[in-house]
Length: 499
Image (cartoon, rainbow, N blue to C red; front, side, top):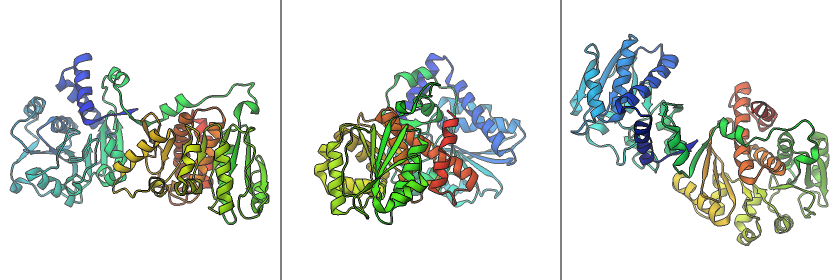
C-alpha cells in the first residue's frame, strides 16, 4: 500500500472523479456512506452525535454523515465552523440537503461554541488532509473546546490541524482523537509517536478511489499489509529438502547474556531455515545444546565472550550481535567476520554499537546488509540526537541510501529504509513487543529468511511483518502486558499458517 502526500491525495480524488467517472458530490456521498456504516457497526449504541464541520470538503463529508445517521433515527447535531468566507460547492450543496429536523448551529464567534452534552460522541470534520498552517482564531477556539471535553472524539480522515506529510509543531491546536477513520490509505503523519494522541485507534476505510492512480503514481512511502507479506512469502513444494532452505549462522552471547542468542536461535529455527548454526562463548554451549537441540552449536575458545572468527563459506546468511558485549577481543573477532563476509549480513545490538565506535567498519559491510537499530542505537550510529521522529526517519533513509544498506528503525510502525530511498512502514505489532529480547528474535527471524534466498528487501519487510504479527497473536492469548519474547517466537508458526 503506497502512502501519499497531501497534494497526491487531492490529485487522486480528481483522477477518480475524471476517470470513473463520478461527480465529486457522489464520491463524497460514497465516502460518507462508508463512514456511516462503520459508525453503525461499531458505535451504534451511541445515538447522541455532535458533528463539527468546516466549510470545505471534509465538512461536506460530515454533513452527509449527519443526514445518513439522522435517517437511522440518531440524535444528530451539526456545528459549522466558519473559518473562511468561501465554502466548497459540495459543502454548500450538502448543507442544502440537510434535513430540517437536524439542529444546525453556525459558529462564527467564540460565544457561538456550545456546551456539549456529556453523552454525545464528537465527530471531527473541521479540516481534512490539505491543511498547511496551524489553526487559529475561531477554529483554534473550537479545537481547544473539543480537547477540553471528556467526550469521545472520532476524526474523519485526519485529526483537524494535523499536517499530512510533515512535522506538526503546533501540538496544542490539533484535535486529540480517540479514533481516526482515515479514507483509503493512512497518512504519513499518523505513523509517528509524536502524533499518537491525535490519531488514537486508526481504521482505514476504502472508498473506491481509482486503483489505476495507485499503480501509476510514484511514492517513496509504503505501508506493509498482509497482502504485501503474502506476495513476498515463498510457499514450499512437496519434494523440497533442507538443503534448499539455507544454512544460517548466528554469532552472539557473553557471560550473563546467553539468553539473547538463545532467543535469536529459536527465532531462526522458526523462520524455516534448513540448518542453523550458532557460535557462543563456551559458557553458553550446554545452554544452547539443551534448549535448541535443532541447532548446531559451536563453542568459542573463550568461556565468557566471543574471541574467534570462523570460516563463512558454508553459510547462506549471518546474523551478528545478540548479547555479544563489547570486549576488545570480541571487537577484533566481529571485525574479522564482517571483513570476510561476501554477502549481506544482519547486524543488531552490540554489533551496531561497535560499528558506531568504529566508523572504518562501514567500508567492509557488504551492500544490502540489514541493520536493525532501535532509536538509541540509531542515534549512536548517526552520532546525533534527533528532536523529532520525522528528522530521525529522514536521517535513517539517507544513511540507507549513502551506505547502500537496509536500516530497520524499530518502534511502533517499524520503518524499513531501503537503499533506493523507499521506506516501508509496518502495520503489525503492539506495545507487548517493547520487552527485552524482542530485537534478538527479530534478528534471528530476518537472518533465517535471508538464508532461505529471500533477498535483503524481502527478508527485512517480511521479517518485520511476521515478528509484529506473531506479537499480535501472542498478545491476544497472553495480554499485551504479559507477552514475553518466547511467546512471540512460539506464535511465528501461526503467522506462516495465514499465508
